[in-house]
Length: 451
Ligand code: SF4
Image (cartoon, rainbow, N blue to C red; front, side, top):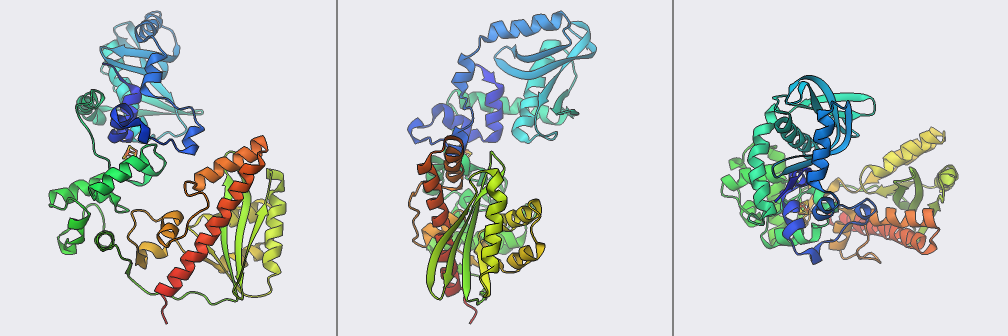
């Protein structure tokens, strides 16, 4: 049984992911639309595509000949196999004589995160055995810059983890999921959320990851109900603050009691006009394609969409929106979700040299609904996305499976293939987002009213 660099990378991304990809119920896997657009590898497709023995022999013979640079080569030692972006010839003794090799990885960062870091450690671990050297380094290259990474501190961890990886690949060790933020775009997100919910896993609480979960386990707090009963004064302070633990306990209580917990009342601005705004950008083509705006004035609600079909139309769209704001002639509050909208406005006004006075009017009238959750009110929810919150309040999107990422994919279909239906769906999704903002604002002003 081989262990490949792919297995190592996956393991450090999430050990459950490595297990589920090989032994999980494949019918429950749902590849996210955003990931679908990328080339999708599996362990089998990778290993089936190559004759390991032949390829690694080829690399050895190139090293024997002292080739200066060896690109995209497979190396192996017993059952450990890996593909290196590049091997560079360097000074130093090795089995081949007075020269040696170092692995170089081309990345878009010089400080790779754990999965890519450990992949480098793993490749170096194999290379050291082939070359019979003690050289403990590999290179990461970003364009013209090269960073050398020493693997000494990680080698022991890798050696211990290789045993666990072997057990996972052989199906002898199942790893239960830690349901964290990054799970949202994973193909196993529904499966893992279900498993975590069935066991009331602590990682379902927003902000609790593997490390805090381990710490709480040692204190006998093993699930959400036991956290709900915990005493704040007895919780450790080394991993996070008392304020975070206060939230964790209240979140656990809200989940077990299935009720909202109000932490603090707030006042909402009273303006004759309310705008509920959601902006969507095209990630591939780097422009904003829609400013969706649901306007409520004297109890009347109307949805308006400001569109740019191409990057060239972005300025026109922005001017149209800014004129619309100027022509309101009455005070307004612009409700949005998270910091994305203010950032979009700022960059669009700057990019298109639009009057900064208008930007300032928008900024002063903006009201972010997102930070109210957790800090002022806690809902019996695992995560606080716009969709989670609005769904909890009874609002349903026309397409219940769609999300922000789906909308990006839909717009791309319109942009690249002129598929009108996709554009209509993307606009309908945006309109639902705006309606969700209105529902949430009304709920909050009713529940958290300071008067
Ligand atoms: S959903 Fe999360 S826990 Fe489950 S496999 Fe994916 S990353 Fe791992």
